[in-house]
Image (tube, rainbow, N blue to C red):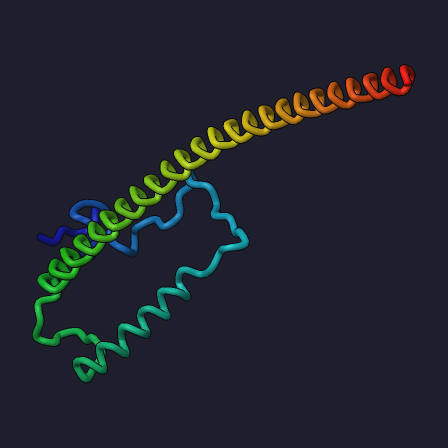
Length: 161
């Protein structure tokens, strides 16, 4: 059911079930900050024009004409059907996005597990390296001991001849 503008004396149709018509709808609000422009900013209106032009071309290709008033169709029914389709697309998008986020989270968790495994492997490799270094040091000490013993024996044998 359509309602009229809340502004006294105005007989235009309200934008919502209650409230002002488009003519009386305040599009500026003092309680909201001014928009900022950033490096990724672009014109929403320009993007909308591109989409509207594309839709008009598609309508002409499909129906032989652009969308016009008094075309024999029920605009409220078409709107409800399109809004239902839009709601379904929005839910589809949200569900797919949730699946994608869940998959990303699983990958992040897997990366975390792999990092832990790599860290454990690194610690094992450090222990192996330390053990190898200790073994090498023991081996060198034994070699030095044996070389020293051989040198003393050779010295003793050379002195005793």
